[in-house]
Length: 269
Image (cartoon, rainbow, N blue to C red; front, top):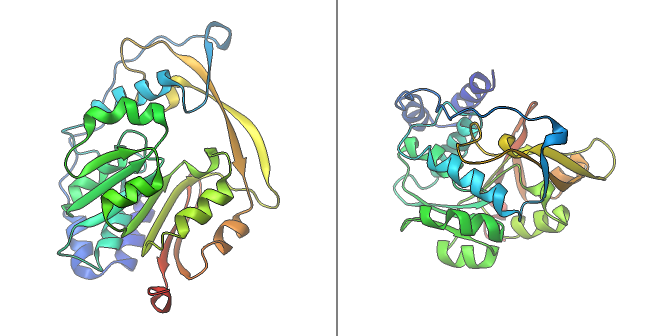
């Protein structure tokens, strides 16, 4: 359902030549199948704490490693990444697209962008544990960082700010949002956001280790519960924070997201 809606949005938003390029992407080889492990009851699982937990980072790295060499355009979330990359690239079709991926884990969305054929320089900003687990994936044009300013220095500028399911898990999401928008990226793509209707909500979220990252729990890992703080603040505040931007599209449930474009008269501001 989401894929059909995004395809329609791409057709409406993108110039005809770029849309044809997206539509002509090679068909994926099929879903990536990972080994299944027997489920345990909640009482039988241990409890891990937060995104700095090395076990969590190692599981996501192992899941991502299994995707290298595959076309993953049929995986959940991949279609929005491709749309964002193609939308941002329309302004500089012959140049390398510089992408800052905030909270990009071990590179799933970098891999998702590959079938577009757009030349990309991709920097992921992540936790210390995630960067350590993913370092071996780095290439000349794909690197991991723990600090935004260091990532920006390596990129040499920014064309697309990309962030999926990360803002709500940082300690102060409003401050992080302000810092990221202050980079003045021409295009911003958010997805998998957790926003509230009226007031700020801070709670603890618990998930199974196996539910984090693409695919099933790889062989050699034992499932566990992972808990981390989550902050939901009002959607109206989130949208208002994008001063100088035009809201191009809002994506609905089950994964709320937004595509923003910097207003023409704000590009030099």
